[in-house]
Structure formats: structure tokens, C-alpha cells
Amino acid sequence: MKKFTLSLFALVATVSMYAQTYEYKVVTIVESIVPMGMGRSRMIENKENLDVNKFTTSRTSGKDSKQGDVDRGDLKIDTFDETKLLNFFSGVGINFQNIASNDALISSKINLLASQGWELVFMTSGVESDAGKEDGNGIYITRLTFKKAK
Image (cartoon, rainbow, N blue to C red; front, side, top):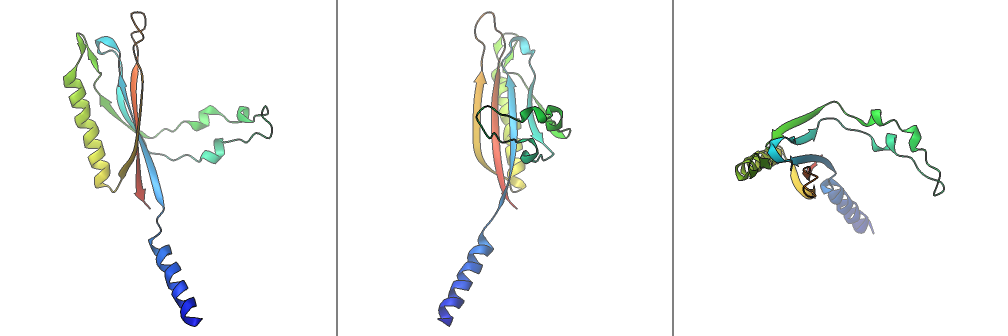
């Protein structure tokens, strides 16, 4: 019994020693789909943390909400990195040089974060594109989620 208890303790200690917790980081890329290069394209990385619990309320019934008690101004952070990117469109249409340049900047960011120990684990993208002659607006957004062992 003594051997079993000692073996169990050693196993639990070993598993606990190798158990890791992670910290996560999100980088958001917004690329403009506005003709004539008039949009604003950026890569954004926050530099502050927020506590989600301070801005989360619970409903006790389907209709009662305390979200009115949450001030949107408190949600905004002041510290973030902003990397200028080029727009997808120039004066004559889609600009492939701009796309290649953005790819180089995004790759540089991913490589920088990887060298700091961050691992890319998720990538999500979406688009709100030009809806025709009367629209002329749109964005292409990509969220990169990284993790790193604490």
C-alpha cells in the first residue's frame, strides 16, 4: 500500500508539474475595400487587459437585463499598437502590390510574435464587401489568436 501511495503521489506531482496554463492575445487586421484608396487599413494589437467580469451581467429571466448599468466608455482601452496597412483598391481597381505588401507586414507581425513565444492557434476572417454601384464601402477583417504558456 505504501508503494502504491508513493507511486500515486509521484504521478500526480509529475502531471501537475507539466500542466500548463496559457495566456491569449488577439491581433485584428482590418483591410479596406473602398475604391480610390480612401479607406483606412490597420493591424491592431491591444496593450491592456480588461476584466470581462466587470462588464458581464446575468439575466434571471429572459427579459430582465442589467446591461444598462454597464458604461460603454469603461470598455475602451487607451493603449494599443496600430500598424498602417495599404488598401485593397487604388484609383484603377484592385491593387495586387498593396495586397503583397500587406501580406509582408502581417507575416512580419506573426514572425515577431512567434519569436516572443506566441503560437498562432486560430484565424477567423469575414468580409463586408461592396454591395454594388450605390455602396462603395467594405472591409475585410481577420482576427489572429495567439497563445503562450504562462
